[in-house]
Image 1: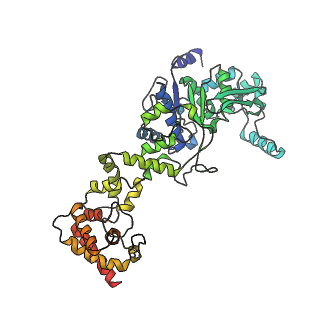
Image 2: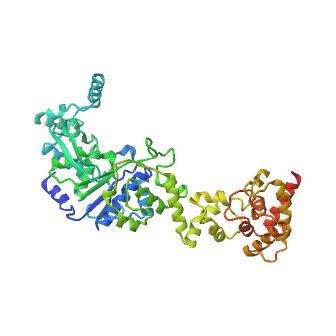
Image 3: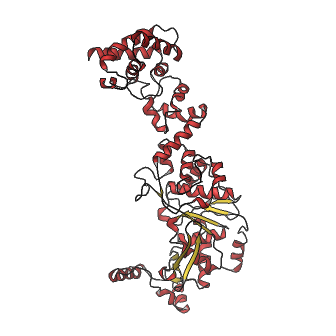
Length: 497
């Protein structure tokens, strides 16, 4: 490429200011680790008054999944993670999709050759496989033997003229060390002799990740790179690429992995790898974001519940841990429950209504049901199991009437339920206060404890031992006709037992 090409490209590089990026590959749904990286990048940018870029890194054609990029856009939008530049919002350094930048990578790969920090490699697959077999037989670490780095200018020209397939490899200086500083892991030193001459441009003209992300970060003016610590091992090669071009390196921030336990990563098989998995399980997106922000980062102090705006103010790289973050469902459940309890009545009703309607088709007061549920659920997905008795009383074993704490059993229920039915059937008003007053009077007349009456009622009306609200609330939900009908069915079953 001529000088003008590079001048045009580099004239667009934003100068000054804080710029970071989230650069996912469109290979499927967003992993929780990816969401956390996006969140941290967002928090860093917003706190600094800077710019967040979304870049789609799709150079691995075999792993690309149709529709995955659109899913990334929708998921970030649902989380409230807004980016300032990206494929679907535009920006001064477009395009933001790597497959649309192929010409740029090719030009910069050739420039790196001209700078003496890369070279054409014409070795075919058979040659490379042979090298691997020799190394395996010799029990030495496999790495490319650099034979093409020694080709003369005439040999290279001849092969290029003959259209011999090639890749371009980074030429790593074998002496000395590569050193860089990471905001989390501190000073890192790597012996150059341990680094292989990696491929930076494949035979199809597409760049490898290690090359494309360096070129793009430079040309997009990225000042801070935040990503998972699995990329720490690749960073020395990135630093050498920056040096080969004569560019300044960005600030590096590598964050720890998220683990299911001390030895196992989150996985799709366990249903805990992707953001969508947790939404389907009944978690709120605000609770998920809040929780993953705390995975590997500490805000200091005792407070753990933060809005996105509060996280922007609190976030500090100094709070990021080096150690792997262990995913704790119990803590997430507690946090999700806290978010549910903090909702307004209207917000909560809107959130739970789809879950109620999964199992309830009768015309009932869903707002009243929601008011009973709000303090009892940590997950929205728990709701269908709590309210599925409303359409039809579930078949139940007579043993459910036995409750040692309440001092009840089936024989006691056989005596109590006809009394309950007679007492409430005469009510002219059917509401919580009226029913409660009548049952309280009945308890007093029978000389019993509240539980000896209320527990058999709960079991008879719901077939459950755990329901939203107690027996009185169940009567209100079901209505008078349905309540009396269920009591009649329970009384008959007890009589025939």
